[in-house]
Length: 224
Image (cartoon, rainbow, N blue to C red; front, side, top):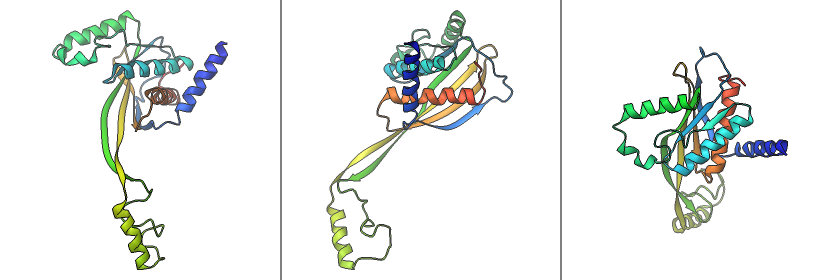
């Protein structure tokens, strides 16, 4: 039964790897010696609490699946479930930092992964109901190709002017993952991903988890 649950989990993450979430940049400290961590803390700082919770648990699940001991920090760090109130405590930086250090020690976290949304872009584009681009190139297949008479092209172009369609927004999210060695307080690995027009936080967070774990193992940032 346990083997079956592991297989189902592995397949779900493999399928998620086909999502729109892709790795765009990665870096690791060449002077860092790969080591086995007893407890990798995973903290996600997203605007929505539900997205934070889902992402943390999916990343932790896949780390554990690959033999890397990890834990979510949703209920551990200060303001974890009250990010909407963050503006009220931003002037208490020393207090927050001391609290994080205390919680890391209390939970015996020896490596900490912080995942943040560092950018978001939105672009608007026009989608036609008839399935061709505005401007009149579709009749010939490619722009300026030979074929058809001027009246054929004129009739086609009238259709593009009268064509009905709609505007749609293309939204792209850029996420950054940083892994710190707690003992040295050094950044040992960083990766950036982008996700276009996400349909499901569940699937995209699994894809992120797949990328993260694959990077950590392939780049030999950590060892089992």
